[in-house]
Image 1 (cartoon, rainbow, N blue to C red):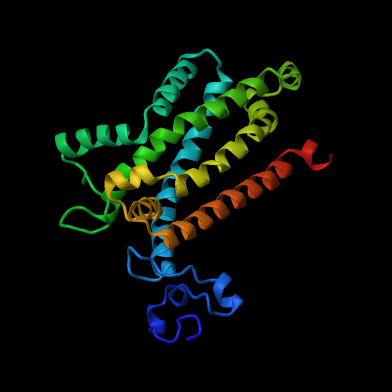
Image 2 (image 1 turned 90 degrees about the horizontal axis):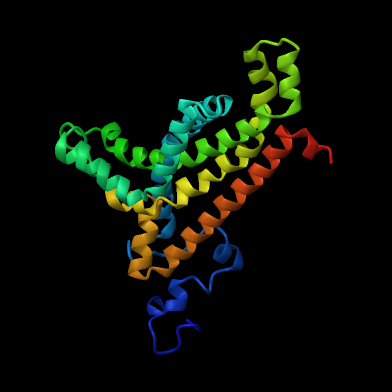
Length: 268
């Protein structure tokens, strides 16, 4: 008890509680400390909440990417068409609506009016509300908010590629239109949106505070908000560290992938 002093119980000393007397290997690696709000070690709470958010984000990402690629490519192939105009207007509208507004709108329709879905996603199963039914609305909010932006990025890149001379040359040579799209246009059109798509990963993991709070989902974002409101500095610091790591890792993965799909960058 040198840190605690002669007249103090060592177990009550805040420095000892935070582990300042531990060896450096224990202080700085693997142990994030003790949560003042949850009354549990940070590791016991944070990784469980992060796992829940990864499930939510993974489902949303698995829907956003295929939909954005399909509609973005089809729209870019036919610039000025009815599909192109519809996607542009829809994308702008969906992106401009904040998450809490779309969440309230969906709750009003599917919960209060139709009664098809539960209004919360707290992962506590009652009667007819299964795990899948509780995930529908949170996933829908994320998809609606993110789909329009990503689809418009894909569409813009596809429009630019379709005006390139090598595309016109391939068409004039008599190649089937499907071959021109699949072998010449598609890969080049996906170069620019590739990093945009990967940047949605940090948003879906660390930027879902509003969605998780509205639906009561026990995830990483809601945990971060509650910890910050409570003043749980230890939990906030650990969550911030994980969020930064995810952002940096995603950016690094995007740069590596960009070099792989773009040979001009790879060999310069």
